[in-house]
Image (cartoon, rainbow, N blue to C red; front, top):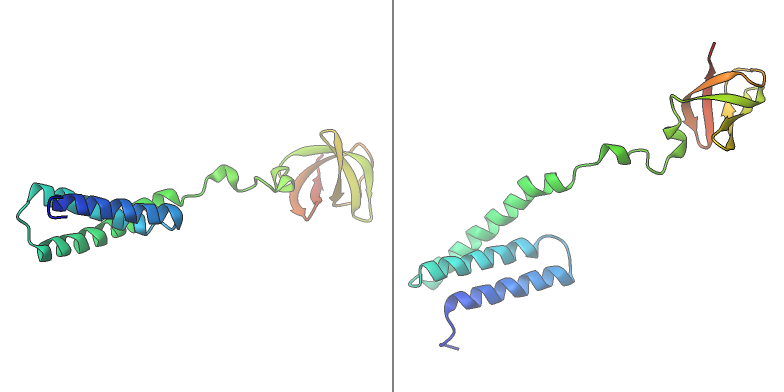
Length: 148
């Protein structure tokens, strides 16, 4: 074991920590593994570094790599795409669109032709063929207003 250079042990530790991250994902051991790998590079560059200096270097690099992930990388990974807000909400995608009533709205309920299907609508009483605009959604019912 004396014949193996010390920086290789840091790189082996880095690989073990990253392997643990692969098996038990959570983004924590990855950054500590990165710190171990960088510590290996430091030990390669400064071969006479004492064990205490190596340990302190590893601790500081582990803290810095975890902090860099938490404050810089994580916010970039966690942003929401604006197009996904209504992905599985088909009714909300209809807000603002105009449709023709296929059945009259009587007592606040009727049906509108939306594409090749009929959707329940709720709004003021209107005759068949009236143009309506979707202003909201209540479950699977489109809330509409009359268009002149």
